[in-house]
Length: 167
Ligand code: AR6
Image (cartoon, rainbow, N blue to C red; front, side):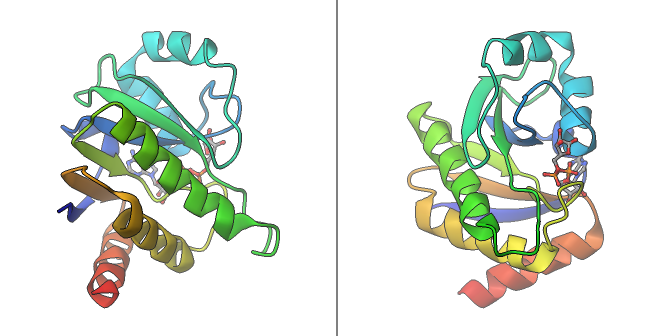
């Protein structure tokens, strides 16, 4: 049985087997949570990312965590929001599923997700949280703990409400 937790704060501080990075297809860094993760992990993370040759939207790739407390980083690429009719919900769902699959194939027990696509990529927070919770509940498998790491209080409250409604 997987425990779902909502934590408010900076994902780079979490002590988990893997934190998820909301990256772009280059995997070579950016702003938002991606920038924060690269700053906290140090330059060896970028060096490993260069060996991965990018990542398609909806897919995920794993690296080590370097200077992070987290042992690994699972880099995923969420969709840019174009109004919702260009496959964005399916691509966002795929991000969560692929991260969970990669985590399980590495026998990881704990993973923390940011709210993928809801910053620079513009995905509305409510439907994004509903997809995140639905996919994690359906596909967490034998992962012991999944954390939704929310950067602000409003997002944390949104996730708590979505989880409560999901039963
Ligand atoms: N810890 C937890 N959550 C955070 C942190 C943090 N340190 N920093 C931001 N967030 P974003 P995206 C939240 O923009 O929308 C990058 O340039 C933030 O409040 O980081 O998927 C990449 O390289 C928001 O709720 O990612 C891509 O080009 C969520 O994390 C692009 O941005 C995601 O916001 C990806 O955009």
